[in-house]
Length: 339
Image (cartoon, rainbow, N blue to C red):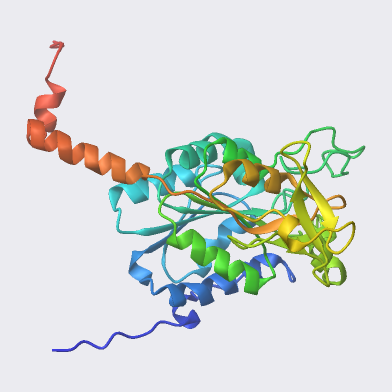
């Protein structure tokens, strides 16, 4: 008998909960893009899990008509690792923010990436603590005034992409919250990658940090401040696509050049290779006004996943030693009888 497979829509992934973010927050745009993208991926709701920590972004699981955990501060990667190990067939997404994952949760963030757990880790970076009313976060820029730094922050900000690459990430990407045409392909690429897929999503907090990324996201200037990466293609940007990136002849550094000036042609430009980790480091640190901000997939270099390795090891040990017995394990080795 032929079964009819019903194609899911955005509505199928929309829960019955009232969405409670501030009006104008980019979280709405990310949520809408996610709900539209999942049906295109052909995933099943019953196999999809969203895990979050604490913060504005961490309301996300409530608004997805899937399984989910609203866990504790900074520990979403630990919960998600447990979910994936318990049932490798599940499609696990981690939703976190710059305060949640890069302060109290840094340890879990780094090790989920280092281990290459097969999850999609989305970090909403608005460079502020939005839920708790605007204190500085680990990504807040030096000099920025907040209620907790009234005379300006003296901290040096964490660069999420650089931290992920330093933890030996195998997939690193970046997107803008309100640009669905750019965000959706990044989500699809992250989902297709086997292993920990890290995506930094840039957003402005409309209440406490409305200018966090305006130098990148403002529409009148976005073409000159954004570099949209395409694997195997020259790195070109600008309103009229007149600018490009070139590797300096004097060393492994990038410089911005104008196509058509001083004999520069497209053949002189650096070509994006998303398997090149060294280039990904350079791209991840670029920021206006001297450079455009790199968006898209910076690095994709797949490797065996942590969950696959764990289950392979368990299967191998069980074949060698037989099925384990908890009672035998508890009474093995040195034991004491307490009277």
